[in-house]
Length: 222
Image (spheres, rainbow, N blue to C red):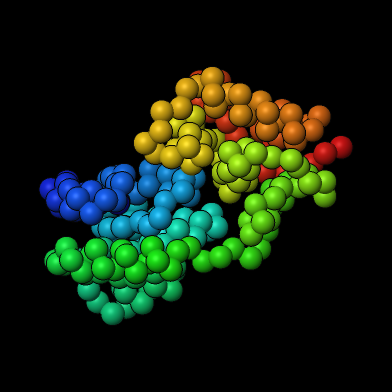
């Protein structure tokens, strides 16, 4: 849930949790854009009027990152052009404020039932390509033998190629927001992934000490 009205956010979060949803609340558009794209959520509730960047910008960045998580716009803006623009950019539904909480729950159930759009195209970053439908990865055409978590880790890197990802962002994307993941556990998985990427693995996934990790966008094996 991306909402800067704290009182509203607390109310909605309470109702959602009472209905057995696990909720992550963010009030910054910049943080939300990177967090959503690098994580696995069933759905996103997104306000349009945020303190830094607009919800439409968040939505645009999320879709440009090839993240197909269902997004429900929840906004006081109720003009037809505003709604059409949000839906055209990639929103799955649009709910205007004020709203009845039962309607919000019904809309949420609807988009979660539909799930994200089944990906058809491969994700590609340099010599690394992922088949999202089969959850397989290749480097220069050679298929890798990855565990589920290694694949999820590599997918997170490929979706955000060229961008620095913190340990927390990687852990949330692979293990889930509520999970407690030690630095050592994450390091072991990254080391294993680098090894399976071959001799150039350490060049593909680079460490920025004290900051995080980055997958070089133009990686190519020589």
